[in-house]
Image (tube, rainbow, N blue to C red):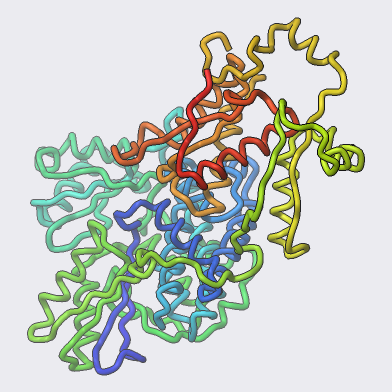
Length: 574
């Protein structure tokens, strides 16, 4: 973590901003959904620009990876897609994605907060004069953070192989109840008595007044705690560090820093002048960079070769804000986490008579903001202003219906009328039209195909689809879940908040089972579980009216609209 002390624009009070090197305790996916939803508003146009550019930047960084790494990155359309992948942390590219997402989250929340205000996130803000510049400069921070994660993984894989499933155990433990000197003594004894080579030695990477963090290759780290009685019986737990070694001056040199920061070529943003001071989490003193490129280098060197000593950082913050002689100090934070809570507490204790005011950069995203004016037409909500249908048994002499059959023959051969609705929505969001009539038609003009289906025992005797019937196509679970993910991500909706799902429900033995499995896995997973007040209702209109052929999707859409209109779900047909 790092801090940026400042008084500019904040009246007579001193202030500092604290950037954490770990994610807050909140649900990461929920935080990114909030950023995504708010980015659709006109008032958050800088946030939208930043998120879009970050998605492009990560795509570019992934494209530059070796093929064996590139194929490990899941396909994604936006940063929200990456945040939704709960398994990203432990893969070979997990550290890079995690670093990039932390930068995106902190910079995005900062931009959304509207204030004039992980290390690389702080770097982007410290070289920017305005929110628009933060949105531009923050993208380069994300790229550098991604490259650092890739580099750390490559170095760490030379020290210890992954498990067969491609994961590591933790590379760091945090322990309490022992002094730094005692822990250092025990680690020195272990490294010496076990003849542990320098590259794989176990060492102290961080500390504060109550805890010490110990880092090393996972197998060596476990052996160190078994070897030392003092460490074995201390209060300790593994940290969520699964992607390699940082804070290791015995592994990295200046050439590593330059290859990470500059990539294939220095960026134009690297010449930007420093606007805010930035304190090192190792020494608590200000970084000395004169421009953005030098600051990135200082930060990368701090992460790779320096430690995190929070007492030094707290002391540096106190020294900086005490120069202002203010009676009040404001601390700008990103929620709370286990480590980041200790620094504000220590600073508060050292303020004496001055008072501390905590300001959370993420509070604005929990205000229940409802997008009022969409940023562009593509973010607009579409209105369905009318609907109608004619099902078997209805009147068949309606002149306009006959005209539709005659003049839209192509639509009759359309395998799914709902695809026409999807195309209509795309045209509306693109601003090509302002009103569209879309739907699907299906007319049985020959008994041949249904005779074959009947002979193959595909048809029910009553005409309905026997959805979830014990006697009842082969869809793919993964493909269906991917479709659900794309829809919920685009809408910024938590799947657990969905209360009703209308299924395709063809009534086939394999199809119903697979569709039910995909729906349950995505909308009602075992973890995290739905609360008691979050029931999930399922339905399929085919069980009531039979399969509509090309009009099946339209019938399902009309049913869902009627459910909303009448606030009632019709019973399932047997």
